Image (tube, rainbow, N blue to C red; front, side):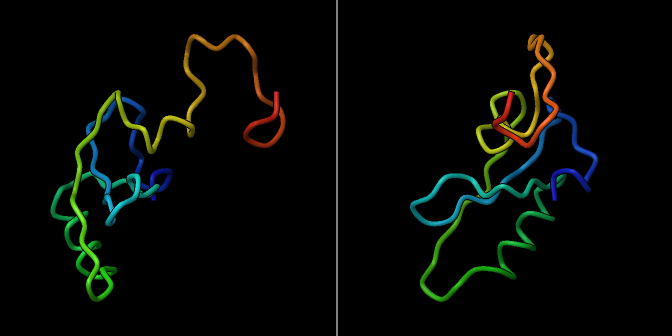
Length: 80
């Protein structure tokens, strides 16, 4: 899981992209770790790719408040 792995917003990491979907929310530090998990979770007939991200990660973009944001969030995600 992203928060448990200790990954920073700008650290290179990997996501599994399942057939016809956006990258899965779970991030992995190592390619081998992502491949192992994908092989464990893949369903019959399903395909996947492993994609590497850094600053441009679309799966993680909503997990962090950017340093340029001046508002602090006090409620749940999506609340200002």
